[in-house]
Image 1 (cartoon, rainbow, N blue to C red):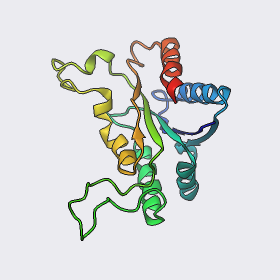
Image 2 (cartoon, one colour):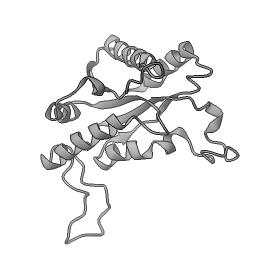
Image 3 (cartoon, rainbow, N blue to C red):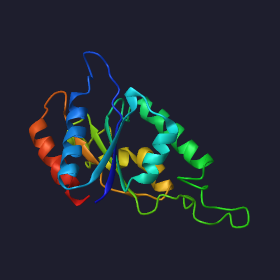
Image 4 (tube, one colour):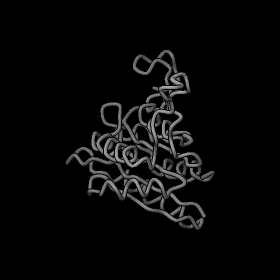
Length: 195
């Protein structure tokens, strides 16, 4: 049995982003994990959280998944606030990370090796309007060949900095103009089978 933490990072915008797809994906993942006998805890950032409890959830979990819509090419700002609060507390407590890994005696030691989350894994799952074709193609103007995983390096780097393994990002594309929710749900089930 594995311990899974699913973080819902949706931010509500009336008439534009009500969170239905995010909730459906979170519920689908939770159900799939529970059917396999895994224990699941959840956080819905928008509904509020207690920072100390979130640090404890991160210590408890084997796998952490963030489900977020993409707003202006990143996760909603409430997710950044959550990360700042949880990981700063985890640093102060020295429960998620001790430091950046270097010391004054050995400043050449590898930066990003002071984490305490070894043995844990992290995955981003995102929904956005960008079509699949916008990624991995050097001829595309906006992302210039970058993958979805490349676009979210700032989000995944936090967990890698703390020692967690980074799993491939899951992405639902074209959700406003050409949604395929049925296929997206099949794909998320397949994507998380290895967890």
